[in-house]
Length: 499
Image (spheres, rainbow, N blue to C red):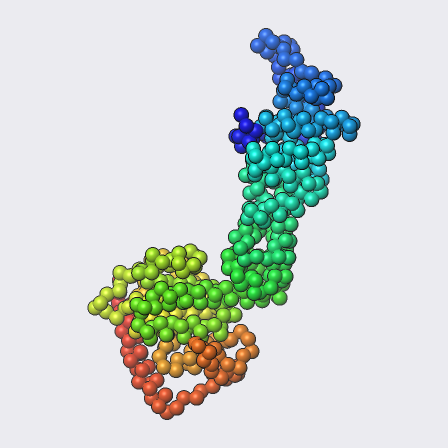
């Protein structure tokens, strides 16, 4: 049977090598062939040769008759051989192992069992691997690559980390792939090198890989790695790795047990990243919805969606999390939208009827430190509702399945909401409501960004400067009355709808 197939089919468990001398192994083997009183089992005593006899067989390169337990003894005894004898016999043993998966497994296990980087395999055996590497690559490429790393003493852990990065596998996954023990010191050291290398040279394509490495790291080392990631990697790179930032947020964000281990500066860095990633998801959603449905929606609806996206860009530093509810007709396009599965839900559309005022819309929930901002983007019910962020409100909006527009509005109505319109000149009203609740642009700007480069003069103390004419005021008041009537009907219908 080819060596590679033997190796993958075999799970060889050896006792700790401490105290298991070659002589002890042979004595144990002799005892196992004897019954009561030392009589041979099955009427035949299996002769166990001495270490001297076994060494002579190896030196003569007569390897075919050596039994499994004798190979265990030989590999252990080689540590006491002269350099000349060990070097002379190393290559033949490797060549024998290529045809014997069991022997190959024994050699690799001995290679990995030490804690000093050299294992319990003699140096000539380690050096001789280079001469059979090409042959092993043909038999089992995965195994050959791992063994090549392990024989590069004292750089085995560093080499294993490089191999893992290139193949986007953790060191633990690499050794499990070739049926080796994943709890080896060299594997734990390699994970540290993986994270060190990522921090020095971060790549967005390694997003999922670095999360997997963090998952396998010891808690204390993981905390230190997270601190270094947040401190040493520029924000512009981390913003391109939403999976990593969400993983850190879910374990080290506000309210999580690990949050206390972060210093103030690192906590602030995480807060900024959480806001940037949340807004980036939202911005990507708006752009893809506009591309996909722009020729179907009414022009003013698309315009409103883009204006809201531009407005919220000013507040991205305040965002902590995002939940998106999409109408049922978008269900087939979820993969296209590119959002994390936990971020997006499909609205139950059964309460959208032609005989009432509920219309199809997207709903986004932005979480800040103290509030939930619920955006209804399209239709007559376009609005922003602000309610307190509590465990109850967050669990309902972020974790409840099967929500509909009416269910969301009924829930909002029961939590003392502030309702903000999206009608003419809404920017100033929205900004002042946010300002009063401590939600302000993250940078000390002197203007608020809008769509297509439009800006409004802004002062941190007073908010957006008002430049409304009398006609503007009249036009807004007229449109606001219609909006308020629509909202009253929508909330009345939501309250009266069946739960």
